[in-house]
Image: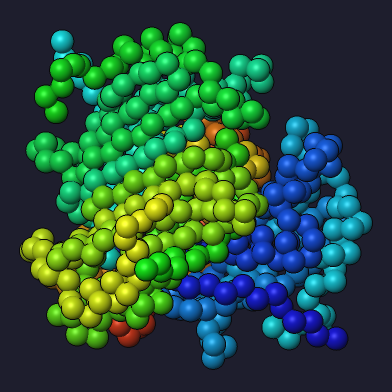
Length: 148
Length: 148
Length: 148
Length: 148
């Protein structure tokens, strides 16, 4: 079974590129996060409501505890690319998102991965992901075995 | 009577400059704010304690409601400059900070100004500045009449 | 005669808001610039081609030499707003862009203005705007007298 | 033999923290890069001169092709920490830098690693690192075997 990745459109803007003319690697992570927020909106878990819900006790804090990226080819000012996002894995207390930055010809410019761990802000304890979130993430789970 | 401006050292870093090779104007405002935070630390009103004090009722929110900048000369990657910060004015419910970015020869590259207004987060009401903050700011007030 | 402003859609993302929960003023300028780049794309003068054209002698550098903003109401994480962009003025060697950030009800959250001055990178000389750019900008010029 | 890491002082500023109150992970990479630029200054290879040398043919482009971070504990607005930087490895065409963010008690908040690959901007070819750069980096190489 194959699922379609979530697509986030991206144009590399003036401030994304640095003095060397290509995207600054820290800004690539910002774009990954914008793709992730759009994705979370799309599955009914917008981050702003997770962080500041009507009932403070309902707050879901999902800090990124691991992040990595490979920058294979230079992303230059003005390029129009897409971030393809997939849920790589949903665990009991965490989930991982993977990203590929591709152009219209399918050429891969960059890849990334973020690990999100449910954490109680005060105590630092790590409760289980709510079932609703697990299911929403699972519905977009990456097909296995993956051929990526 | 003349007072010395607060000095904040700044090196223009790779990500500060954009694809055109000079500082991105939005990042200049980030540096103004770093200078402002350092200044507030120096007068005993660190922003993180103002925003999240031990007693929530003591919170002081001072959002910037006006900001402007003139970028006279290009600030390039690698330049070592200083942000000279002065309290331009302290009013009943607000204060204004002015910034000059200068090199070691005194050449001015940029100027800026931010207006900070005490605001109650929930209601949007604008109370008076606490006397302690007024005095701390006033002690660094810009000399008048200014010849700047 | 009235012209319609150029519209840029914006969602306030996690990293736009700072520790005080509202948009960091420097990031507002980043969004102004993204709106401006989209606008320049739309009138046939994409910035990446202006900065790095096929013929280096055709380069058009249009640094922002003045910028200002008023932040009337807090822009919070998750808000969906629009940046309405208008060409305020086209002069011989420069032009000014104005921005309004509004929600779907027309409530204004912020305003801004940027002044762009054609500048030769090496010499700092300020040539006249090419006629094609003047006309493209003029076609989106703000109606006068403005009732804004 | 043990070498001392390069130390970069860091205060978590208002705009570093996001709407959830802790440092935005993309900004952590910006700070890693500031530490890296300071380090490169300290060993006599400032990036701005590497990217735009007097002789364009002397340009050294060292794009980051891999980056990763672990964010173990929340870095909050106002925290004063240090980025400890070490050269992990110097290869023929690349080198790796590792980072630890620690407080004054030695508590580790975050770790990171960046891989820098010498690349010719036009062709994408990957020449050997100049001997001077190899030696400068090697002089700060992490002791082996590492007990970290």
